[in-house]
Image (cartoon, rainbow over all chains, first blue to last red; front, side, top):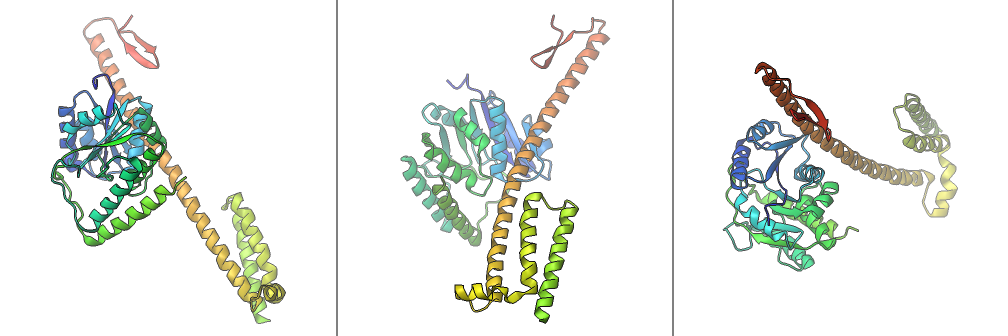
Length: 233
Length: 147
């Protein structure tokens, strides 16, 4: 079933020269039939060169736009080059490419499939305000989608042609807009959405932010994003 | 009386500045009208600050000067909001341009690689004593060695 679909793996990367080669190598090893596109989001390090050397296609933004900006470019590339499925994977190696076929299988029934961290598989944990924010987001979005969505901010997603076309034209550049707002829009347009439980691995490079102040700011932004997204149009 | 001279002179300077910016084409026309109107309204108000006293007492505001101040603050706020809106729009436009540049650069890289490959094939073909392969156009792509 998956064999005849043209699949593009999109990896947004901003200064990820340290980890990107390993991620690309693993994806190509695990999923040799799929094309890999690295969206270099205005990196100041060697990301572009390293990614090209690792055998990925690379599109480089002239300056940093943020994940949302990088992803719209990725979806534009997928749309213009006529891909059937686009998968988004983080460049820090925390998403396991072995789950990709599962996500693609789920696309037979759904338009957008999220690889979710808190849905039973793996032992990923967050605490404090960040957890409240994620809890709030998942409660509201689950109710909207009428299906459990435990990890609305996951950057591990798969979508079909219709959603690729939508995201190629419209993809918010704001923080959290790239995950939460896109989900709200897709659900509101009536497209079926689902999640697949995945285990996350520790990042191969970089550190997750744990500061309580940042977590509070995160909570505030999550609420603002949600409020705006739900009240749009 | 001193006050009237001071505000009047400021209004004149303002009008001169706007006119000069317009003359040098430093302001887009859509802003030009707005700022010219602002300049022309401030000029008489500058020289005769009490001219609004009747209007203000009808509105229940103690003096014309405070009415002007209030309106000025509201107006400046609106201008600020408009500028943020304009900046957001510009960001959207530069974002689209950035995407375009990235796609074009990637395509250019592919074309260059393809060209380098073609050159290598051509060179190899002539070096081996074979006939030079035919290079033809098909669907906008170069095709080598097919008859």
